[in-house]
Length: 165
Image: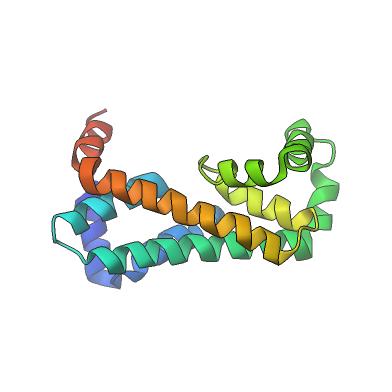
């Protein structure tokens, strides 16, 4: 079912659909990244779509989303910080980033929803773009490689379990 939907979208929009799904994900597009990447990997493994083009679109979409979120935090962060300063979850996230820094940034990229909030918090904290890129981009590469590998070899089984639930 998910694969049919993705195939229809690919027929209409091409591989751009993978890029847009990952780029617009943090901005309210309700397409779960995990399902999209597993489906893309499964379809590419079956030879239905191009493996490298699919992976490239997914990775570049995720890197774009991270970069946009980082710069949004950098340029608009003070307004957001004023709104969320009283929020205990926001305070906890800031404390973790200050205390655990690189490790928190890397691991946070593997957690759904958090992966899109962390770049904004990093930008808000005043971290340089170079440091952000040196930690976030390799974690994006790791996450996409892991999920693409899982989708390539186990995606059919995983997706059938998810869809039947």
